[in-house]
Length: 162
Length: 282
Image (cartoon, rainbow over all chains, first blue to last red):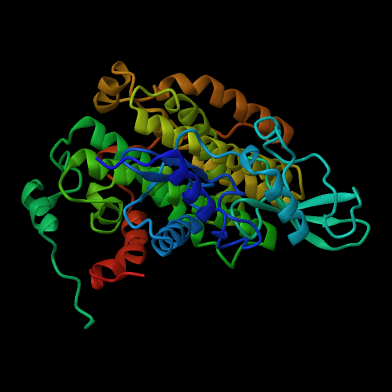
């Protein structure tokens, strides 16, 4: 059976570090925390979906497959794992910065389980004001809610705590 | 690819042969008893699939953009659950049927969903009533299933329960908003709950199929969820200034394939394309 070493694992992770999320191309699949790691034997990249029905999941797997093939890792499998379930706490600090710069308010860290409803105020990613209001708990994709800034009046997406 | 008339599939023939003489709907189980776990996974998967399909009918028609997005997103979550449960059902059955095959190439008598999910959307308040009752039950059910001794069921439930919490919250908020709203919204909300209340008992039924699985620690005992369900419904209805619906005679039968006329119509729309063009891919 093929077994991969730590150096190869690091090279694979570096490849994945450049694979953008299809819905939010400002962040990569590693930023979002949906790559759960690389299994040594049998070698596989382990990926977990954000939401059960997220249609981007298939595209993400295909993008990861293509990136691995391009980098010469043709015999590394891509496998979906459900457990433990994905949480916004797994979004990296770099991912949070990138989301904010892209105009999406990132979820607060470390409180996903306690704040499912995402009710606490969030800073507007356009003007920084904390006078903001939830318009709809469901937004343009399963992972985002729609919010509005009461100061600059701009609507914005917010990553739901999950 | 040349269009073809829907052809009779091999499973359709098998199923027709198994059906009681005359194919009577009421003559007992049309389908031979199936291994309990497979049947249980169909129940879980079909509930999510059929309600997911119903909710997509609202897409572009809901009263406001925010709830249009919400209903579509809830539908998407439910169809995601269905994919996982039905794929697992296909794996357990081991007859080379995957989730798609089970969703699109089974006929109405082989579906195992409860009657509540297949009912037409009605007006917006009816849709909200159905969602509130279903999501409240599903939340308790999935919390229980997250502790299932079958790890593949446990991981699906643990993942989905986080999403179902949103569904239950959102639909409860709307019950309150409509119930405690205008005279008309209150009337419609009351009528919606009255209509759907007859389908509630079926969601808590435990039969022999489930009993064996409950004993094995695989299934969650639906009966044990009733007290928490009733308490939650009463709490929300109190906030909505509504009273508990009059108790009509409960109807049941979905779990053994005795469905209302509505399911066939829903399936006709949902299954038309993959049945007419069996090799169609995205």
